Image (cartoon, rainbow, N blue to C red; front, side, top):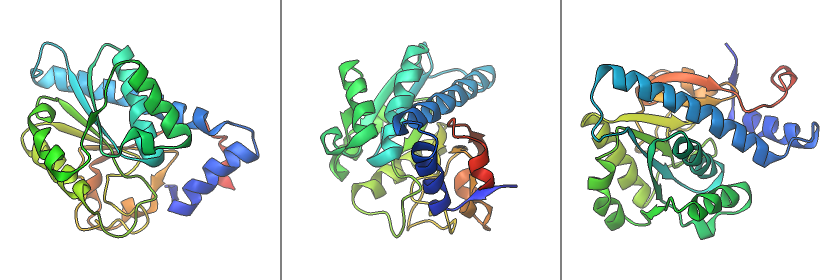
Length: 233
């Protein structure tokens, strides 16, 4: 079973761009499309076992900053185009995003898909009822770059996600559950407890550590279009 450390995951992205000429935004787009397809499959599974809360399946996507947030915005677009009722929530203001993540967030804004803001603890609390209407919650708050302890309003956002999971929502983490160190498999004080983790290229090293499965749930590896020989290298 192949696994990647934080540094190895970054190196695959770098080499795919520098050695093979694949634009980084294409890697993000591929990752988002793969993740969206998995979310759609999960929605079908939910529909076979339970009734949706509304007339159509609803997905709430919580986006942070950096690549993970960019993934979340791109996933939102693909799900919206597939006919899913999508609500997008920003835990970091889109104007603070840079690079590929900023591009993806800007597309969502131009599509009039939001986002709704969750920029402090009070705003997280205010959005709780709206988030509670979702059948699926997609966690795109913190990615593989996270280390240390979760801070500020993200503690509240993660707590809300876990509460709504207890209330029956299906939680899907993108690449790594927010708050989980992808190398050690330990929570930074708090971490999202996902039903499914859609992780890119390969499992992260920390997922194999004792107790990590409490946070990852079922792990599904998703392709981003990076050349396969990079894993061997």
